[in-house]
Length: 524
Image 1 (spheres, rainbow, N blue to C red):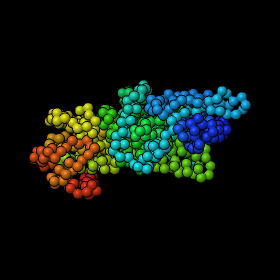
Image 2: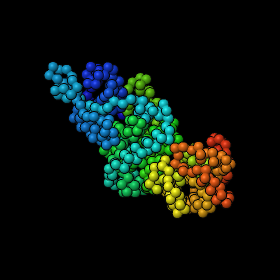
Image 3: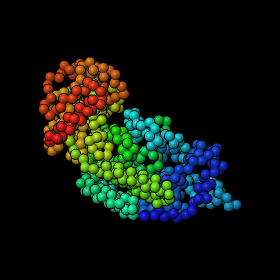
Image 4: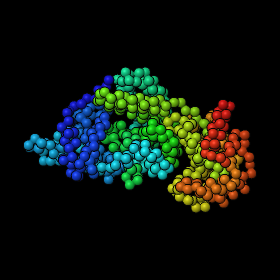
């Protein structure tokens, strides 16, 4: 067992904070939340965070001075993300008569981060459990995360792969070795798998470091560290105790959130978030690194496993068993995320209203470990390319033939990069022209991966009805556009395109598509 060394008795300070009479905001009842490194006290309008007097291999809060310094650092870092949440630094002081006071005149005996209290139901982890994630929330969350990555300060490091290697060797390996009684040989097997994946992707990770994508990020970006304030996701509780732990590839920062969604049975939302992030970041460098996303999600899950093992070491009885069960659940998520991926290119085609995007969104999470396959959508890429929000209607000038050629070239470039990284990709576009279809067939052949084309069809009256009823979507198609497409469609797709009747329900279309994919895969 790897012991978390408790260096001071904080029981008096904890008891003091649990007494509402000491609070300045009219609190009548105090809630106490304990993590493996902190005590959080929740009042009526305020919240106070006290760091545990512990020493772990990856942090040291063992002295009062260190806790003061890291409390101040926590304020500085998190003010970038959520300035309205972080209010200041307070102390528990020992007065001349020996009593404790909150920010009194005596000597500090403990330091606290003072925060604005928010409804715990608005913490994204709780919100998602209660309500799931709709498209609007996914887009808002993606924008928040993208903003954090754009403002994050680039850090020049010699090796992007070395950062992940350090996590595996210096954090996960000692923890898993110390907990073989819980993990058996599964921990060692997982670490070996992570090291194999890291060797495979090392060159790309190092290139990303040279390109400035290793940055001073949030570092602990999971659902429990995001809160809805006035309906907008805001990040809080970024890592403050170790600059190295927070200096990561932006894709690895995102991977924590993706893993958390997958772990919570929200794989579809994870896939949508990943693909929205890719579109908003608008840099093909991220597409060519997608083969490493499974590795990154697996490492993030393994870290959560480690944290729960550390928490179990601080507990007894039922609380210890609960922490161990949680650790093993994260181990399973890490094992699943590190599974081998089969790169292939799937093109979902058809006229507007056939349900291309609906089908692609259902298929993408099923085609790869972790958050699933990359989904490239022509409607979204056109909006990004023309400098518009996904839900803004584009002017007619953005639909000229030369613009459409650029859109397909953009899709093709990104698809090639994803395939080269060893990850599957779905491209969702109309594909009316033979040369458009042939270009993607050729890209798959050149990459040495299977190509599967799905050609969706439906009766014209169904297409008209669907596009007219569509709301809050990136597509600008209208009934008039469908009519033009019907008139333009003169060519029958080639033999590598499976016709899929999409006139029925979403489930019927999905079943037909999966049958086509299965038969095509069996024939490879």
